[in-house]
Structures are given as structure tokens and as C-alpha cells.
Amino acid sequence: MDDYSRLKALIAKMSGVVVAYSGGVDSTLLAKAATDALGKTRAMCVLIDSCLVPKVEIEEAVTRARELGLNLTRLHVDVLAVDGVAENEPDRCYHCKKALFSKMTEIAHEHGLPYVLDGSNIDDDADYRPGSKALAELAVRSPFKELEFTKDQVREISRKLGLPTWNKPSFACLASRVPYGTPLTEEALEMIESAENVLRELGFSQFRVRHHGNLARIEIPPEDMDRLNVPATRKHIVDAFEKLGYAYITLDLAGYRMGSFNKMLHTES
Image 1 (cartoon, rainbow, N blue to C red):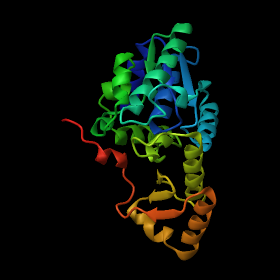
Image 2: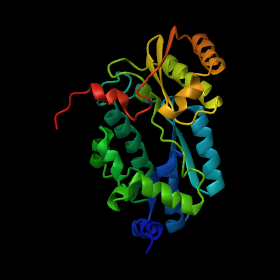
Image 3: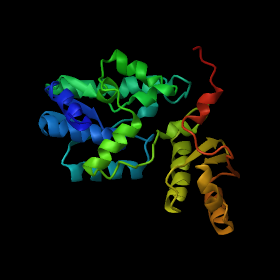
Image 4: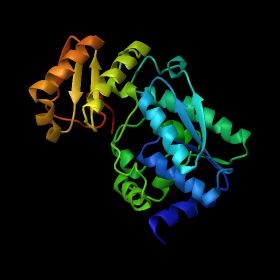
């Protein structure tokens, strides 16, 4: 049995699911597998629409769901009103995930669907992810973890299925661009979103704009740095970022890395 067949077989045993869908690599494959295994009436996909997710990502996810024939529910949530989120302490993700997946659990109960699924894979355990505690508390299932799928396996299955998300760059919520302890505001998140749109429109695919007040720290892969440093490109970025309110625009010489703010945490092993 190939990996996709194993995935569908596991989900088929669940009889009914709500999939946490974002339009990313993992959740798109999971949503397709759930729909293929159970049909649209027993596989519901819930897309969280909030200020922590760029509008372009939301619209792309909606379009992708339509193309794949998913049973999609778009849920608008004021996440900054959730206790423990706007304060942006290191456990922010726990409070956010607990609130969002509690809503998905309610939706699942309302529709008689026994399980809520998320797209975490075993590679996610290598990073600091307090949200995983919330998923465990709510008995959310992660099929990729249960089958011990890595991110590369998820991408390979997606590629074989012809899913356009197979090589989509990893994305994290906009809150991850702000240092822990710096309160989250809609204004700051909009500023970050607009700055990252500048890089997206220039053709960069993997990037982060880390927000340090009036200083923007750009993270891109080292292989893209020469392209960014072309004088005309650099000037375009500086001019655009200054219009958004950034006084200082910097390039992080270490390059893009997932969860770069986590290096400042001192957690017990």
C-alpha cells in the first residue's frame, strides 16, 4: 500500500472529520485525503480567517478549496481578543490553538463528525511548538504524525497527486514576525503583511519580515541575497518599507530560518 493509500485508509476509519485547513502543503494534502476517503458530507474543512493570516493566503486557500471540491467553511475569528494572544508571550501559540481548535471541535460536534484533524508532521517536533499541547488537550488527531510522515514525504505525495501546493514555501502566522513580549496590534500586523507583499511582488518566495518596532529585519535564503542586493531592487524595497513606516530596513545575513525568535527562549530540555 502506498503512502497516500495508507493515509486515506487511516482517515476512512474515523467515519467523519473536520480538517483544519490553511491552504498550505500539509493541510491541503490532508483535506484532499479526507475528502477522497469520506466524501464531502463527512469531511468538512475549516479555514480560519483572522488578522494573523495574510489576505493573499486566505484568498489563495479559498480558490484552492474550490478547485479541489472541498467542503469549506470560512470562519472569521478575532484572535487578538483571545486571552493570552495579543500579549505575545512565548506560550501565545498555546492560547491561540486552544481557542481556534475549540471552535473546530464545536463545529465537529454540531455536524456529528467524531474527529478534528490537523496537518502536523513529525518534523514539526524539532521546533518549539507550544500549540501542540493544546491539540493534545482537545484530542485533535494528526494523521501525518500517526503515520510518521516527514515534510518531504508530504511534499512527495502531493507532487505525485499533482497538487500545486507540493512545493509551496512554508508559512507561519504573522505573529511569528514579532519578538516575544512585544504586544500584537492590528496596525503592526498590517504593516508586516504589507512589507511581505512587497517581497512577494518582487518574486521572492521564501521570506520573513521580522518586526522590531520601526526596524524591519528581512530574512530570505542566502541564495536570494544577491538578487535582493541589486541596487534597483534594494531601493524599491527601502522606498516601499519607509512608506509603510519603517525607519530602518535590514537584511539578516544568517538568512531565512524557521522560528528565528525561538533562539532567544531558554526552555528546559
